[in-house]
Image 1 (tube, rainbow, N blue to C red):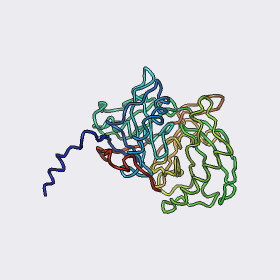
Image 2: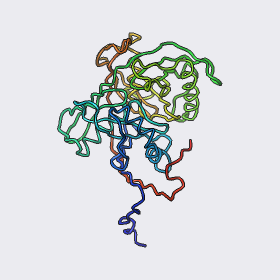
Image 3: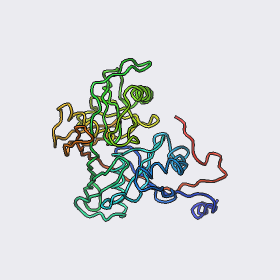
Image 4: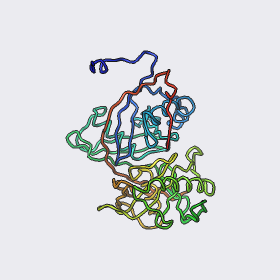
Length: 346
């Protein structure tokens, strides 16, 4: 047996090759495309996202779905910026499609760019201006001896659509919820109020109930973004709960896209919860809360600025987290493979 032959083997010329680097933020994966994903067309990041869905979606399914990915995989395509003073743009992908914004993704992509040397890792704070489909994101990475200690970012203006609403959900009953935007739309449900455990061993039930509640809220109170109908889709349900870990103030368990479970506290979800707390008078500018995830990883959230957005009283949240690089791969798409574009089982 000559195992060295495997290392020197090259795939046939008609096979597609996609290179990626993998990271995670608080346990939530981010697969960043390096080569092989064709550049989407359009003048804005939102237009390029639409082009990905229209022409290039096989690259998403091939790398997010099995056998190269899994039901909870998450990805990022770095694209040119749409603003003259921005550094780059991002299009985030998942099992169902493409996100409006992603907080854990911002933390991870900044970390990867610095720790791989794509951007010089100068000690101190390194600033980024990033164009997302939801708008401009300002981020700062704390660098010490070439290592990214944390990344904080100012999200897009975040606001509440409704507080203390309620919806009847089949097989669950009456479910109270708040609806808010933090770069993506979420319905927030107090887990204890509906008798739901948010411990990791109850993930199957959380996925089931999250899907049911998402469908019911989408039908009863559709999200309304003030400027763009493409940003008016309910992304997920976040179950809030008492924390399980020292140093945390509260708990976020996010069920998003097609039943994905966020391993992190969810950066856009933290942003929307900051907006809710500010609207209720429970959180003032500069006050920091620590949000934990289903596995206990933590993000810090605070009100960085007070704003007005499309007629809404809004806040600009600051979220802080930490990411780690965990892999690098080249994926191969054999045109003879009947499952070449991927499949998904839950």
